[in-house]
Length: 395
Image (cartoon, rainbow, N blue to C red; front, side, top):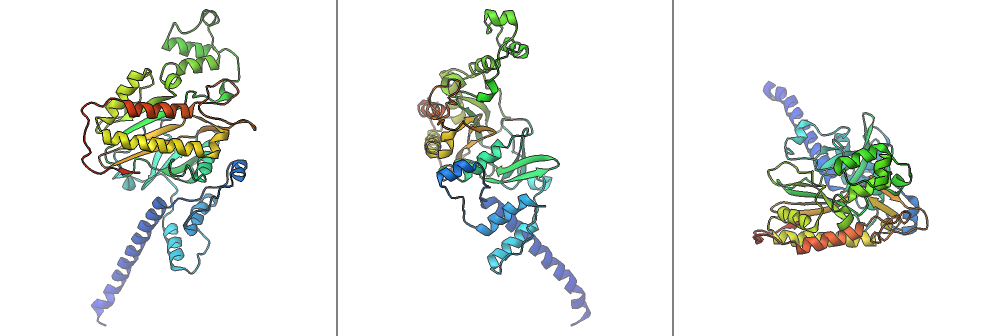
C-alpha cells in the first residue's frame, strides 16, 4: 500500500460514516411519518366497555415511539437481533425530535399556515407533523385523540396522533400535518354543532356586566328591557346570542375560515348566517369543480357514518370540533379535528348528537350539523361547472 492510499483511508471512512448517518436520519423521518403509534390508555371505562383492541402493526417502532414519552426522547433498550428491528432502533436513536422544526426542515413548507384556533397554538414539527399546544391544565384533547385512535371506526377520520411532548415548560401533542403533500390548496375550517359551549360553562346564573358590554357592542338592541336596566346578562344568554349571529344555531355549523390558492386566509366569516350566504361561500370555495364536490360529499358521509358507529361519541359531548376540508388539483381530504372541549357526560346519559339541546341533556347537534352540511354541499349551485381534468386522489 503506498502513502497516498494510506492517507486517503480516513477521508473515505469519514465519507462512509456521513452517508450511513444520512441514511439513518432519512429512515427515521420515514418511520415517524408513515407509522401510527398505538395510543396510551385513556378513558379506561369506555375502552373496557367497547372491547376494542389498541394493538397495531409494527410493534417495535410503536414501542420505541411510546418510550419517548417516558424519558429524554431516546430509545435506550436494546433491540432484538432481527435486522429490521436493529435498523429501526438505530434510526429512531439517530433523530431526537425534542423541538419544533428548524428552518432547514421548513424550507419546503413556506405555504404552511394556521387557519383558525388560538393564535400560535400550532407549530410545524417535522416532515408531515405539527405540534399543538395544550391550552390550560385540561388534558381533554390528548385523551380524545388517544381514545379515538383506538376506535376502528374513527382511525381514518381524524389526524394521525403520535405522542405528547413537553418542551420548555409547555405541553404539546404531535399530530399529522393535514397540509402536508398539498400544493397551494383550497382549505376550509367548519366549526360543527348547534352549541359551541360546554354545559359546565353556563351552569352559573349570575348576570355579568362584561358580557352585557360585549353583547351591545355587536347589537345594541339585543338585550331585553330588564337586561338593559341591570346592564348585565348571564353567560348562557350571551353564548346563545353569540351563536345566533352565525349559522351555528340554524344550520348546526358555521364556516370558521377559508384559504384560497394564492390568497391569505380569511377568518372573519362568523357573521355568515343565512343558508343563501352559506351556499354562496361554498360555491366560491368549490369554484365550479363538480368532481371535487362529489368526492367531498362522499368523504363527509364516510365521516358521519364512522361517527355514528363509534361508541366513544355516545357518551361524550363534542364541543368546538371542526371538519377540515382541503383539496388541490390532484387530491382531496377531509378530517374531524379539535377535541379540546370534548367531555364525557354523566353516567347513564347517552347523546344522539341530533336531538335539540336543553340544559342537562348534553346534546350539541354535531350530527344535525353534519346532515345539514352534506345537504348544502350536495345542493349548492356551482357556477360554470368544471370537468375533471385529472384523477383526484382521496387522502
